[in-house]
Image (cartoon, rainbow, N blue to C red; front, top):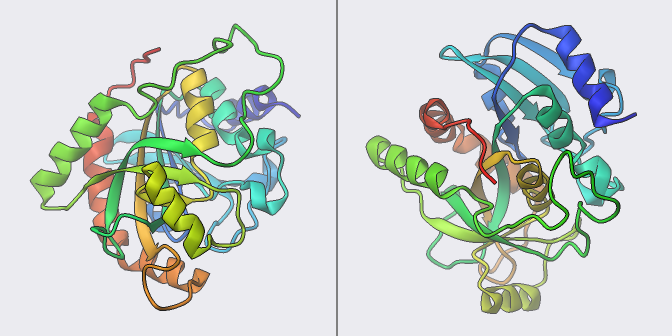
Amino acid sequence: MTPQLAADFLLSQTSLRPKHAVILGSGLGAFADSLTDALSIPYCDIPGWPQSTAIGHAGRLCLGTLNGLPLAVLSGRAHLYEGHSIDKAVFGIRALGRFGVKAVVVTNAAGGINLSYSQGGLVLISDHINMLGVNPLTGPNDEAIGPRFPDMTTAYDPQFRAIARDVAQELGIDLPEGVYLACPGPSYETPAEIRAFRTLGADLVGMSTVPEVIVARHMGLRCLAISCVTNMAAGILAQPINHEEVLETGARVRGTFLRLLSAVLPRLDVRTIQ
């Protein structure tokens, strides 16, 4: 099953043709419930679409509108730690690009490495460090989709980030910027690893997002990414990290998160850049 087959299936299921997509991270799935007249499709019903088994990921694609703006919302994603191949982890992005999406907002739950961050805060991702040990573009390249060696200098669209900062200021939401580092998981990082990552320049750590953004940019899609600091990274606080805390924090900030996304999305220009 290919991403094109998945896209063809989606085109057959709805007359909606969204140009914006949102990928929801752990504990942030409530955003999908805000869509109007939504068609909710379980991933298992979409040809080739990988199942999402992580707690806090509903595993469904929602197609609907938000204040009149057509949206495709992925409530849950496929992670490498679930045993998925890298191709499966980015299957959704590749399908959405063929479906007609031009701009993607990627969200995630992340551990805070930067000591100025607080639990429950939102952070705008300005750049990333790939520590997954794999790149989704490895293998034969289809020049019709994107270049063999895509530039990642502005992977996190500067114009989109400026819009998000302006909106956050208007709404009175604190939205600092930071560098996101991706690890494969599923174990949380050790305190020594966090100290090393801080030295490398990382502000946040998580287990997703980077492959999706690489593939999106390869296809010419514009990207914005926002992390919810659901926990402080290992060694920062004198307490263990657990996934229940991640989900609880995501639920606690859902109102702020919804306000920000609802105001940012209509302002994002869907014209592609390379």
